Amino acid sequence: MRKTAKRLLVLFLALMVLAALPFETVFTAKSAAKTDFSAHLQIGKKEVTKKTHQMKADTSVKLKVKALSGKKSVKVNSIQYKSSNTKAVSVSKNGVIRAKAAGTAKITAAVKTKRGNRTVWLKVKVNAAQPGEETGGTSQQPGQESNGVQQPEPVPEPSLPDESGEKILIAYFTRSGNAEKIADMIADRTGGMKFRIETENAYPKDYDAVLEQASKELEQNARPALKTRVENMSEYDTVFLGYPVWFSDIPMAVHSFLDSYDFSGKKIIPFCTSGSSSPQTSYASVRASASGAEVLEGFWTPGASVGNARDEVNEWIDGLGITGRNQTQSTAAEEEGKVKITAGNTDFYAELEDNSSAQALREMLLEGPLTIRMHDYGDMEKVGPLGKSLPVNDENITTGPGDLILYQGNSLVIYYDTNTWNLTRLGKIKDVTKQELLAAFGNGDVTVRLSLS
Image 1: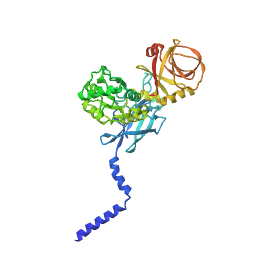
Image 2: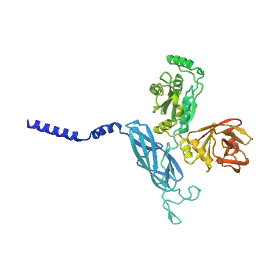
Image 3: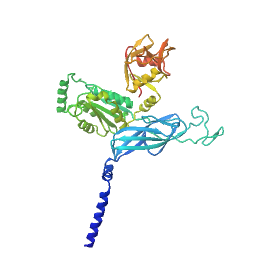
Image 4: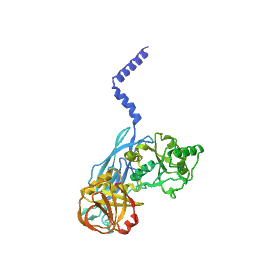
């Protein structure tokens, strides 16, 4: 009886203590376990969280952030980067680390997700270039003095097999053009190569006729013959796969595409649009058809919302930690105030002038890429409408190959020959020849794309 009474007394006291605790304390302890996640920093495939990364001056790398709950990815809503020593190391809003001068800096990344926030860091040590390293002269031995100044010992650059990024293919099947719009956004963010999946027999233009044909193909589990083919699929590490959701699933033409290649060891990332159908069944079909591939978190948006989806697409890609081979270069171009000019398969980078006209053009491009239809004029230039008037800063100048000129305040001119007149210079593609420009822009009308990424 005495033992029973003691046990009851102990139990009673424990209940009294628990009752005295605030409800929030108990609830928070339980919910924390459910929402716990970790954030990780990578450069290439190398984990650099709480580590020191060695860099040489005047080089740059792309920092990737991943959020994980166990082995599952957690969507990252936003990341804010900060450098403790911007004279030695800077970091852009997109995570591009640029080594400027010898020194050490702590880079922090404030990661926000629906599960909560995390702050992670790494240290970056910048080593000055050794004497003679750039000029080809005789370099000092480690520790040897030059002009009485002790030289730092060279630190070997770590091996980064993925520093140049992944080679990315953006394959998409579309009827209305919505999937292609998303593909363009992905290409802008990653620098990936676009590829349109097309059938030998085109689908009808009439919407009801398309539904009828798609329904028959679904019932027959058909595999429509494809007109287009990726000849070098083995070279791609990551494949973004886009499509409209038909009857809650992927179109049979996309099945034909997935059956045509070996995706073993690759990443496949679906993206799709629909009227209202959920994308989950289509994601399951991609996983089932792409045997041996790692299928990552997909992206879906209603077809009516495609035009406003760019921010969501960028956040989704950033959360995946995907870095394309061209992304570091293009992001660096954005950070340095350069404009990327694309004509066909050729990219040029132009440095902007320091005037209000160029600043207004940059502000336009911050809202998204600009597509201009340009035509020949006077055997010396391509000209096309900007769709908006910019401030004018005319002065008497003589143009040369690669000059970007504002004409009458509302048109862009790209010169490939000389002309002397009162003009507003917006920028210049440096070290480019007339022949290189003509090869890219060709004769007649051409569609040119301007972007900051």
